[in-house]
Image: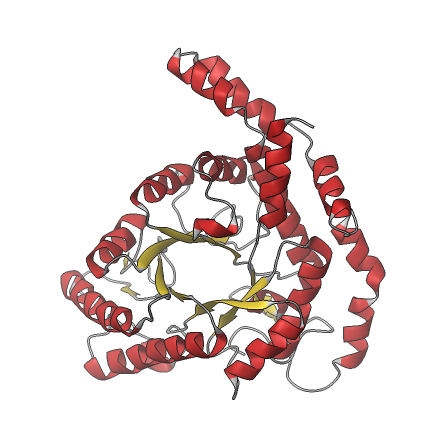
Length: 389
């Protein structure tokens, strides 16, 4: 076994892809939420489903919560249940976009009463972090305007900064804030945190415990996401990812489904700085909306896609690449990357899984496990989880 392959297997064995609780619930488009059988009815059943992904992939040991979608009376008990399932609670995601009060914004709303309500929710999320052992609070705001003149763009930035500062001050010693951005939607004239530069500027102003989250579906077409990754890594401000795929906008498809080469390029920048393992301080999370496909198999497939892109990135011959770059060998440098990308890493990953006591094909193993049939039979009655629940 070559040193490169041995190193790749070591990193892959420690890789963790965080799964989102909401990916296991019913979801759909703006027009329709599609119901499936066996959908979890509460955060406990969501965690149980997430544990199945980890059971078969060995690479998804944390699950992100979304508040209030995953609201419960005893978060310490929920964290203990997760531990019993072999899981940990990961990122706590806030929600300031589904109440009627937030029609004109939340933390940027012109009404101080609405801003107070939103801020109190964010502080509640930090309380939940305390109770669950989570170290990361993720903030995404739907705030913005639809028409010129609707509100003061500058004043909204001031309001945003004020709220972020209050929440930042509440963070514990080992907790951090991850600020997500989105080009557009649901606001169409301007979004208050529309790009990585806006998020980065606010994070720098706040301090070292504030970092940027990159959602791979939140950019204009053609955006070079790997440049953003490289820049934020250099600045020590890359806090995490929401991995998904898009064709047109924020499609939230399975990661690697639309452009697997882009996913490889992103992972290459991370591999160059040895920023893939658990010590990297980067939360690698899926943020996906499985509208048509069965939930657990879709998440398993996404984890596998992320593993394959990572494996290819780890097989890049860095010495050959640097030599070609130094020599100005444009085609040679590109060939080094393409050789790694075109490598079939599935046998390597299958071998790694077998060495760890896992089935070499997680997707097939889950299908044969009977879990899907069990939850369809057991989860009769009650309210299936979905958008907003």
